[in-house]
Image 1 (cartoon, rainbow, N blue to C red):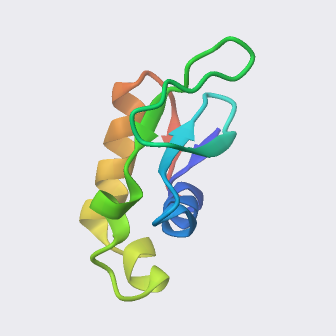
Image 2: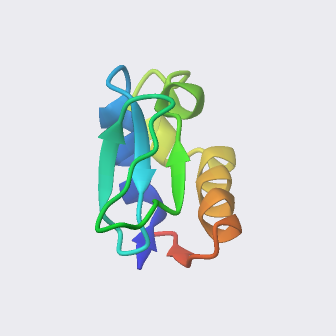
Length: 87
């Protein structure tokens, strides 16, 4: 099961290093922009862009409690066909 705030923490850490690829099993990987990542022959559920999502927050705590950001992450995962819970 994927967890919203865990993904936001990973997005925060990935800022400036690349995009965050997320697989259905919950594993993540920072990938180069425009890359086509695969793990075990499977494409990720979604690739999120950290700078677009969390760079505007001065601190991680603000991002973790922002209702719009939480909803955006959950929608991206749900639109990809996976389940996510807000922890």
